[in-house]
Length: 87
Image (cartoon, rainbow, N blue to C red; front, top):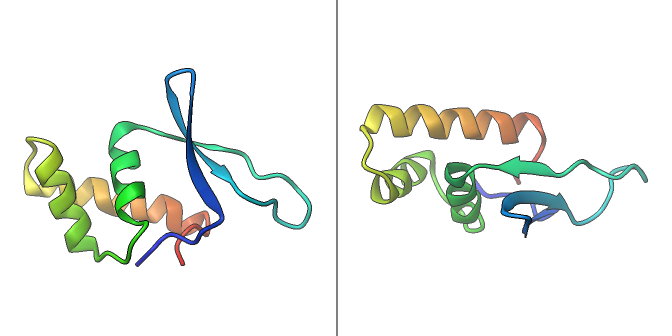
């Protein structure tokens, strides 16, 4: 899976946002606020990645249990999938 290319990451006043490159149907999209974990996963999805690869990415970045990483990845993919952000 991979992100569609309609959003890009921007940092503003210490917060990290995913911002729409273009509007949908002429209506501007709201920016999405990303925490540190979401940013890591977002950046990993700039290239084609499997869910297992995303889990491994989190395990390299954080001292967490595999079960926690799997849950975090699944939740992140669910949210961005429902928002139509996966290609």
